[in-house]
Amino acid sequence: MTVVYHESDANIQFLREHRIAILGYGNLGRSFALNLRDSGLKLVVGNQADRYASLAASDGFQVLSIEQASKEANLIFMLLPDEVMPHIYLENVAPHLRTNDMLIFASSYSVAYGFIEPPSYVDAGLIAPRHLGVAVRDGFVSGLGYPCYVAVAQDYTGQAWNRLLAAALAVGALRQGAIEVSFNQEVELDLFMQQAVLPAIHHTLLAAAEVLINEGYSPEVALTELYLSGELGAILARAAIAGWSRALRRMSPTAQYGILSRTLDFQEMKMRRQMETILDDIRNGDFAQEWSSEFRDGYPRMQQMRRRFESSPMWRYEKEVLEILRGLEISADDDF
Ligand SMILES: NC(=O)c1ccc[n+]([C@@H]2O[C@H](COP(=O)([O-])OP(=O)(O)OC[C@H]3O[C@@H](n4cnc5c(N)ncnc54)[C@H](OP(=O)(O)O)[C@@H]3O)[C@@H](O)[C@H]2O)c1
Image 1 (cartoon, helix red, strand yellow):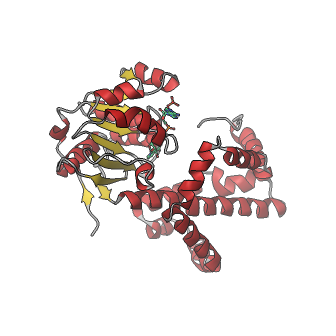
Image 2 (cartoon, rainbow, N blue to C red):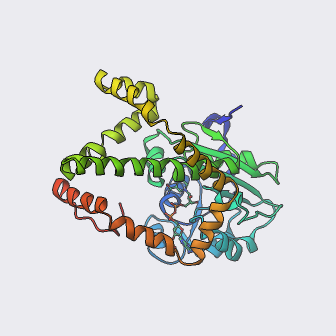
Image 3 (cartoon, protein in one colour):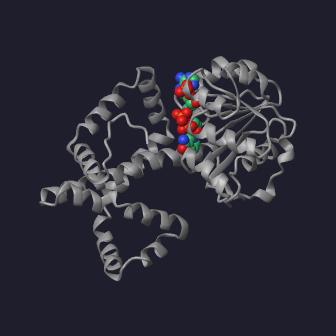
């Protein structure tokens, strides 16, 4: 049975005597750090000395090296990118772990695939928001919260759940109720969404744009209709809150009839088989091995694919359309 934890299940007192470190002050690290502080907890930030470290300092945090922050803390949030986390953990975190310490991850990737093996004398848990890092802060400030998964991989102290839920409460992860999953489930679901669902949506939008532009519609109207209007995003947002059937009922009868009658035409076996193959590669670790060697080699394939994508006609059309419609000058390096 699915277990959902709410704020009433947690007691922040379990963290009162803890020394907390946030390792990595990126998208999620910053949101978690600000939320923990606003919940009345003291913490230090561990980051290499660069722009993220400066941001943490200007936000009023004590900033230490990752190694120093690990030494000082007994509850450590590992908020570094999946592919760099293992070697930073081995060099800077693992040597300083003491009995009863706790490691908290926001993605189970490194632990689930065995790149990080927490020693038997610490607790290991997961607070994995199902939202963008910035939305984790917005959800805390607005009081609306955000969807989240929680898990405990190792309970050495017998207090791992108490400590994890106290931390989850402090970062605002229990406001909407956090769903308990296993470490393996979290990473498999996350990668499946990234590799099976988003590419299918991407492919659908590209194919649809090509059809419309080849049939003589201007790129401006084609891309506006497909996604630049925000209508698609609004439909998904409504479905996330109220479910697909209610989102559908908000549309015109013509739209409802069109969607329901034509959905059947897209029920291809090929797509289902493709998704099953992707899930197999995620579960048997093939993707994790592929990504590790890509990282080791300096991301050659990723750079090549990005270059190909960004020089494709669709990307050029999109750039032109955004310049015309919104006055936005976009370069491939832009960070939105
Ligand atoms: N962002 C999200 O929406 C989100 C949502 C749920 C879960 N998560 C999980 O949260 C974790 C952090 O993700 P994020 O999106 O916050 O990452 P991010 O924005 O890319 O930030 C990563 C942090 O890691 C540091 N870092 C990167 N490379 C490093 C290196 N080689 N050595 C030392 N430090 C390095 C960065 O600092 P410098 O660049 O200054 O070194 C930065 O502080 C990941 O496990 C991710 O899966 C993220």
